[in-house]
Amino acid sequence: MTAEPGQRSSLGAPAARNLATTTKTSPQMREISPRWLLRVLPWVDVAGGVYRVNRRLTYPVGGGRVSFANTGARIHVVPPTLAELPPLHGLAGDPVLDLVGDRFEQREYERGDTIVRAGRPADELIVVARGRVRRIRAGEYGARAFAGILAGGDHAGADEPAPGEPWDSTLTADTACTVLFLRWEELRALSERSPALRDRLAAYRARRAAPQNRWGEAEIATAAGHRGEVTLPGTFADYDPGPREYELSVSQTVLRVHTRVTDLYNDPMDQKEEQLRLTIQAVRESQEREMIVNRDFGLLHQAHPGQRVHTRTGPPGPDDLDELLCRRKKSRFYLAHPRAVAAFHRECSARGVYPDSVEIDGSRLTAWRGVPILPCDKIPISRDGTTSILVLRTGEEDQGVVGLHRGGVPGEREPGLSVRFTGIDARAVASYQVSAYYSVAVLVPDALGVLENVEVAR
Image (cartoon, rainbow, N blue to C red; front, side, top):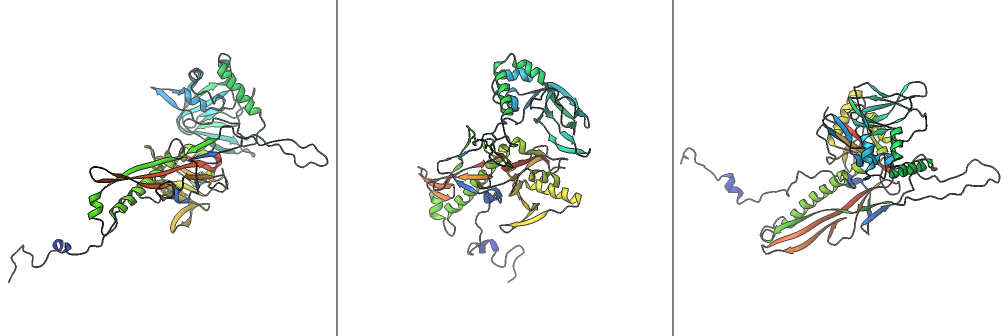
């Protein structure tokens, strides 16, 4: 018998699948990333829920960045942020900062203009409101030596100069810049009318005069190279009276699963377990994101101002990563957005340089000077196509960066993560609370460095 046109002559595949046993995967999830930070960071069990970092007493304070607002072309400082300047540290909220902010003078510069020249009197405090400023010093043999980059919110001349003390470097506009100037003479005159400012400046001068090492810590006096019966200096190691304490943060959610699903459709895959697996992955992704961007304890916000550097030309080059490495010992790894890693490869290719590679947990990764560059898509990229690259020294033994979690919590499923059954409601929906407790601590400032304003869109 001949089949009519359009009629099947055999069983169709869709119908046959109803009788076949399909080979299936477990549910897939695009959000899952390598989460290198969670994998390579040493973890400390915080039994009491709070981790205190005790340090030597450090005299220099402040050193952060000033913020700005504008009215048309007129830029003015946000007064409370002036407390980030070392001489004004501790005055946040004091009305005198409004008066100080009004005394800044705004000046505009084009690319290549000299803002201050080495050798002239350092009688002004400078804050960069917009653009990039290059700091150049005279080298030992007369050559120009690169001494760093200042960008939005950075300052120079904030250490009160001695009478007639000159600038030790030349500041040149790398791009079009807006710079605010405050004469030290005006600040001293204002302190005569403000007891709070006068007391703060006096305390600042006393701190600067106190014996301290090159890291700003209270000096431990020692004697060396002597002979005979020399009276040895008496000393002690002074401690910071207000150490930083880290409370464990939490990422949580409540997973809901209808009991009908788990009763009838649990073969061959456990529906509750698959739901929990995917939910735990999402919680861990949230954990890594918070450990990087959280404004209270995230690594991007914990970096000390002295450990923040800017790229020389925009894209991340070998010299920029070298600058990060030279500021600390025992750097364990870089952390960079995948696009920043690609930008680094482009710079290396343009210069005829070939970065290293290392193998970690079966993955082949880029490395520089033997330090692996771990990709992390949690590091944000701004609208103008810039991001940051972090470098970390890790472990308590090396005074590095450590992850914090709490072991042994009720319903613990993984270290620091618990799953607790919270009941079944009137609609027969079972609920499971998924919680991850964590934080991240920087034990000493040079354990963490950040390369900022890294261009990845060029």
